Image 1: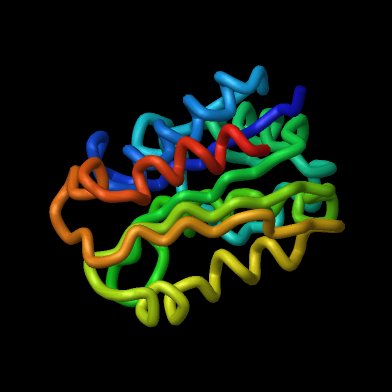
Image 2: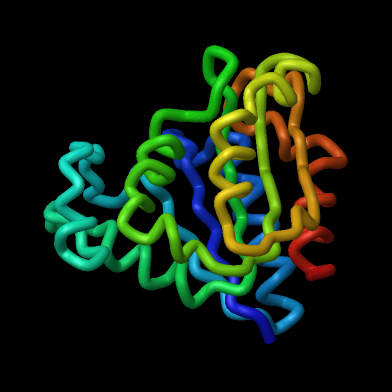
Length: 177
């Protein structure tokens, strides 16, 4: 059994990347894995202030919000799933905030198997151009392997993934961990 952490940065509860996260989670749970899913929109997470307080405090951020608990779950996870819609050729602001707030542990990001779940209103070429921040974050892990990438393309309206093969693929990807 593995510990999975899904970071869902969809601002829409029924957005395409969130729906794919739900399917991924069901597949992994059915296989017997422990899954925690964090919906960034449901959390109280402030923006990094670049004050370096965490450096002076031994890795503890000065902000007292939900991020400390999320970092605890992050450090316990064997598998990390990063899910984001693409907005204006980039990851969502919610995902970028999560990444920025890992700064207190950036030298101890650990070893993880990584999966991407990405949704976009346009094609795969736009997705590939939009992943710089996500790829940069993952490259800072001490050791990682990107085990899977799921791209839901041409799904502008919320919920469109439910009628596509990618919806089943999300379940299967979670199941096959």
